[in-house]
Amino acid sequence: MFIPKLYRSEDYELMKEIIKENSFALLISSLDKIRATHAMMMLNEDDPENIYIESHISRANPQAKTLKNGDEVLCDFLGAHTYISSSWYDHINVSTWNYEAVQIYGKVELMNQEELYSHLEKLTSKYETFQKCPMFVDKMGRAFVEKEMKGAFGMKIIPTEIFIKQKLSQNRKEADFENIISNLENSDENGKKIAEKMKLIK
Image (tube, rainbow, N blue to C red; front, top):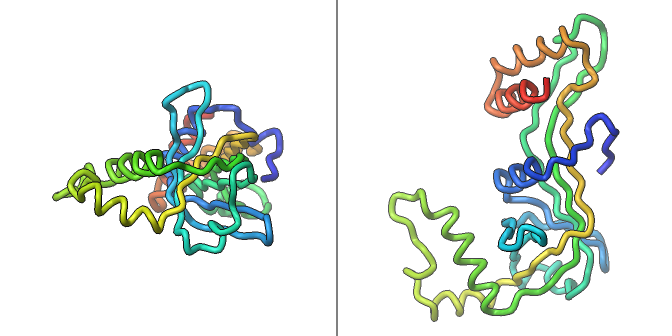
C-alpha cells in the first residue's frame, strides 16, 4: 500500500479499531498465483506484545491447498471511506476519496484442532451475542462442531509488517477542510464517520 508521509499513521489503537470494526477482510497470497479470499479475521491480543490475526477459510478453497507454515500472506482491511467532491473546495481541483486502511504482512502458522475450535468459539461469540436467540458453539455440541471443522482451514497470521493509512484531507487548507466536514455530515453513514474522524485530527 502506497502511503505518503502525510497520511501515514503509527497509531496501533487505530489499527485495532479498524480491524475490529472491519473484520471481513481480504486474505491475499501469491504462491502459485495471486489469490484473494474474503475471510473473517480476528485480532488475538492474549499477549499484547505479540498480537496476531486468526482466520479460517474453506479447505476446498484453492488458496487453502497452497498455504503452509511459514508462507507469507497479506491481510487487507478497509475502514471507513467516502467520496470527496472537488465542488467542496474554494478553487478548481480534482475530486478524491478519504479513507482509513490497514495492511498486515505476516507468516502463516496453521492451527491445530484445539486452536481452531477455540477460534470458532470466539468468532461465534462475537457475532451471536447480540442475536435474539444466539447460537453459540457450546449449544451445537462438540461432536457436531468437530465434524464441521473438517471443512475449515484455520490459520494464525503472525505480523511481519504493519501499514496504517489515514487519508483525511490533511493536505487541505482550513476553510476547505471545514467545508468537507460540513458536507460529509449531511451525507451517508460512511461520510458521517469520516467527518468525525476528520474532527479528531484538526
